[in-house]
Amino acid sequence: MPNLIGRALRNRRAGQDTLAWADLDLQAPENFTLTSPAFDQGTPIPERHRGHIIGANVSPALAWSAPPIGTAELLLIVQDADAPGRRPATHALARGIDPAGAGLPENALANPSPIDGLTHGKGPLGRLGYAGPAPIPSHGPHSYVFQLFALDRRPDLPEKFTVAAAARAMAGHVLGRARLDGTYEIR
Image 1 (cartoon, rainbow, N blue to C red):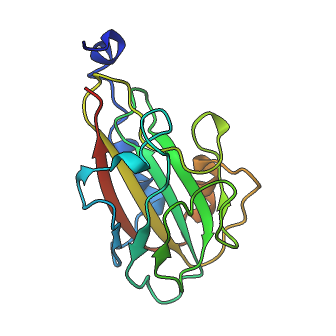
Image 2 (image 1 turned 90 degrees about the horizontal axis):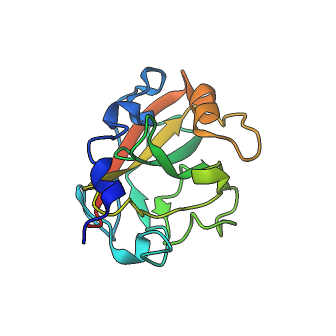
């Protein structure tokens, strides 16, 4: 049976233009790649990596090619571009990712993170760590965008920083970026 709220909000979506990726201050060449062994670009995110109500809420493993020379730190933002509001829902926000590494193992975005130096910003409802996909039933397909930014310096951010604070700290310091989109829908 369709969810009436989801159907009523079906045409309300934040949109791709509200993602950190679209922020004019964060524009840079797409000069490295981001992948996951769990799902391919544009395909559904497996149940294991979905939100705790419908899945195990385990962050997927991520891998990337070499970021641009001069990268001091990588910063990851995972957002739902189809959230029914004016802004995308943030599903993960992490800084302190070592650019010398080639990826993050599964569940690296848990709070606390098993990765030394990785710190979380605030996601949905002030939550720290990964929050997997859990869209409103009957709202339609949602696009979950993993955005990895290569920075020329380590940004000065407060504990439990927000996406807005991260964007301000990254402005003018993005050397490159990579993106991976996954989808999910509850009918």
